[in-house]
Structures are given as C-alpha cells and as structure tokens.
Amino acid sequence: MCKLQEILRAGFAAFTQHQGTRRAVRRWAAAVMACRTAALGGHLWRCPAGHVHRVQYNSCKHRACPQCGGLASEQWLDRLRARLLTCDYYHLVFTVPHELNRLWQWNRVAFGELLLTTVRETLLTLTADPRWLGAQVGLVLSLHTWGRSLTVHPHVHALITGGGWTPDGWKATKRGYLVPMAVVLALFRGKLVAHLQQALSSGQLALPPDSERAAWHTLVAQLRHRHWNVHLAGCYAHGRGVGTYLARYVRGGPLKASQLLAYRHGQVTFRYTDHRDARSKAMRLSTADFIARLAEHVPERGMRLVRHVGLFAPGNRARLAQCRQQLGMLPLAAVPPLTGALFLQRLGLPLMTCCPVCGQALIPVILERHRAPPGVRPAPRAAA
Image 1: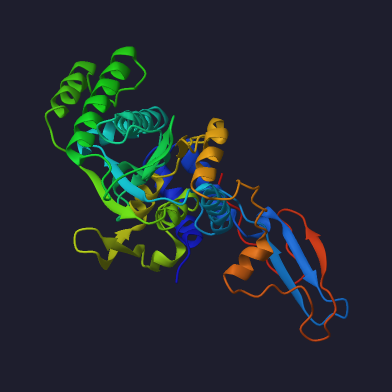
Image 2 (image 1 turned 60 degrees about the horizontal axis):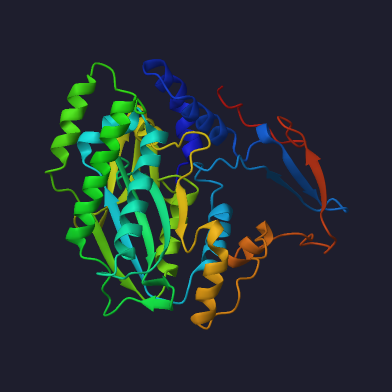
C-alpha cells in the first residue's frame, strides 16, 4: 500500500510548476509531506537497560491529512453522540447543479456559507410549519465537496431529528414521515437561486475568468426551472450511523489511506465505490491528475464545514435539556476527553509503555524538529 506522502513528494513540485495552486493547498501538501517525520520532531522511547528504543514522530494535525485524522474524528463523534436525542432521525443530502461548479471553485468560502445557510433555512422553515411538524428540530449539517471518484461535487449532508420542541413539549413525527421531498426540493431550489442572485448582484461572489456577471445571472435564473437532486436516505431509529458516516469526513479529507492501492510509473491507483451500482472499483490517474483532484477538496484555512443548528445549536442548551427530560434521558454531561492511548485501545492496538524484555517503563526523550534519533536517517523536508 502506498502513501499520500510518497505521491506528493514525487509529484507536487512539478504539479505547482504547471498550474497555480491555492495557498491552502500548498500548506496542506507541506503538512502531509512532513507528517510523522523528523521534520516535526517527536519522542524517542528508550528502555533504561538499552533493550529497545522506539521512535514516535509528531503528526501534522492538518484536517485534510489522511494519516492523522482518526483521533480528531473520533473525538468529534463522541461529542455528537452525547448530544443526540433518543428519537428517530432522517438523513437528507442536498446537491447543486454541476453548472455551478466553476462558481464554487472561485468562491469556496462564500459559496459554502451560502449553501449551508440555504439548507438550514429550508429545513427550519418547513419543519416549523404546522402542516408538516410544527416544531423546532435539531440539525447537524456537514459540507462535502467531492464525489466518490474525487470529482468536484459540493453538497450538504443533513442529520435531522424526527421530532422537535413545541410550547407543549416534545412532538414526534408520525409514521416515519417528515416533509414531502417535492416540497423540500422546491423550497431549497427557490432559496438557493434567490441567494445566488443576491450574492452576484452585491459582488459577494467573484466571477471566474473570461465570464460576465450577466451570463451568470441568466444561468442562475434558468436553474429555478431545473430539477436537481435532494435525496432522503430514510428514517433511522437513532442518528449514530449517520453520525459515524459524517465523522469519517470531518477530518482526513475525501480519500482514506486504505483507498490508495498503488503508485507505479507515475500512475496512482485508488479504490472508490461507484454510487450507480454500489460496487467497489479501481481508478488509475496520472500523478498530476490525482493531485489536482485531491487539491480541489482542501478547505480554505478557517473554513467551517459543520454546523449544529436548532436544538443542537450552542445557544439552545436549555431547550435541549428540556427535550432530554421529556424523552427520559439523563442530563447532558461533559464528555471526557479521548486521549491517544484510549483511542488505540478502542482500535485494539497495543500501546507499548514498558520494555517487552525487562518490563521497565520506557523513558521518553524529546526529539527536536528536523532532528532524527541516533542511527535514524531523517525524512526529506517538505517543500515550501
């Protein structure tokens, strides 16, 4: 199995020479290439009697690094599980027409905020309507930017409670029914078109090169009469499964290390699941094309990809506590921090703190950045 580090070290410098790259992409590449190498420093765990010594380099902790997102994702999932209510849940996916991809590429932060706002307004408006539910629900929204083969495909996953809070207390959905999908799609489409037109008129969205604002206004107006997909994945007895799915993409980026199959002769082979037939397939790309696809999904620095809305909003803790009480749940307690040792224990991986020969506790020795332990050759420094 190859590593993303190997691919970036071999091809990122040439990739940047042939096309411009965003600053966020350069920072990501430098972080991933340095991750768990002597460039970031670490510890040398040494047996007092000299039987063993073990080198442990620091992680880069970049949220789009597939090597070190596991602990952060699990910590996020622990916090989410603690907040989930014991009720039914729905999983909705909101997509945008592919004609807007270029506009997205030139306005990642602004377009992402606009898309998340549109999904939030759509769901809160409809679920507050007495015709459907007439209650305040809890939402977790997660912005994803990729298709399964790493194509550009911005969309939002929404985890929504199957019930909500009313002045009379908790009100649950009936017979696994939330809101008609035709109504959700119509309102989402109308709101998204209106928000895009306003953002284009106010200059909030930058225009791609060689394009005119009037042309984009025309295209967006035509989308009001187009059909695009809002998918309802179904009703679930709890939200843990969907939460686990979302946690996989909170940290680590769109491609997990286990999906990389081979890197030979300038060709990268990776595994993905085709959504059309749900079959696992392999795709082979040149190094430059692979890096280009992956770089599309590196988020801008400070860009928030997850929102907690309604009952799950940070300012709604009192109302969430009332819901928990009515549903017979214990009060929300602070989630104990998940340490690296506990995370390894969950994965069933050994944590070696004592010498396997003599049983004495291993002594940690701090390794400074760019300094390798005796007898260990440092990895090449990351490109700037």
